[in-house]
Amino acid sequence: MEVRCNSLNEVRENVDRIDREIVTLLAKRGNFVTQAASFKKTTDEVKAPNRVEQVIAKVTALAQEQGANPVVVESVYRAMISAFIDAELKEHSLLNAHSGNPN
Image (cartoon, rainbow, N blue to C red):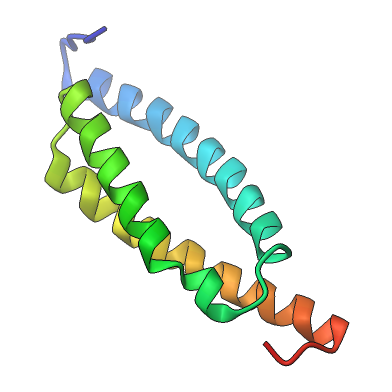
């Protein structure tokens, strides 16, 4: 459902509302990323380049279905995934330090 705004202020209010929703979803996604670190044995499993490409293919297809710009969606997802991988690598390292595993 497309919302038509009558002013710049109305546009900004809608963008702010969506930003709150996005941040809430990022927090939920981050929780799952943190959990995933405990299931992975190596840093290569954390980086998972094949999984990254699967996610990118999925979201660019979703972008096209939803009428979103697939180039923007891919760019945003690549940046987000990179940041989550960095966070997961840190979590993975902490878990391994506590368990005595070198990887």
